[in-house]
Length: 226
Image (cartoon, rainbow, N blue to C red):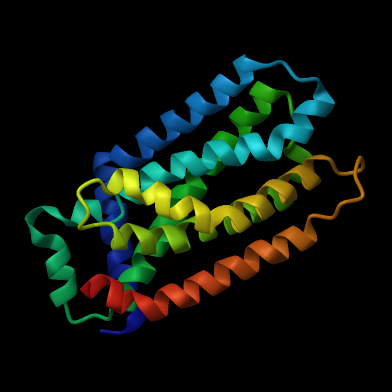
């Protein structure tokens, strides 16, 4: 079986399971929505302040909601020794990682696309003129969160308190990515009111995504066997 064929099988399996149960997606959407609503009720910023805070508020909600989704990446493989079956299958660990990565990117991206209009409504922020660049930021954010999140999810699978350990391990590593996403989002929404360009932050996010994806592909064999 080819590398990409095995990755596609893993992706289809995860999509089929999630669309059947919806346990991860529903909980992530509800949690992110609660965070957005709570912040919107906590203060009433002016239109200018809302745009200045928007990047941070948006990615706080996304980052915490992503933890719920990422924590289940390999947890659903533990019952019935499914994880051991993946290890014994005649496919490379890198293909397993790639299939899981694509499924996480899909679900995180879908989560963010659904929540962007709600965010715009609650904070009275106009996003429609900047949709192409915002979608690029969403793609880079989903890729980055999924690339390192998939690796750490596999690393914490055998830990009893994996749902608690994953954010502890993941957030310090994700700080450069989240910072670049926050700055890029804020720069896009403040277009015309700031001299800061989002391109430099997008390059940082892209570099982070590529580096951690390549590192994960190389190290995943040892992580999965461990």
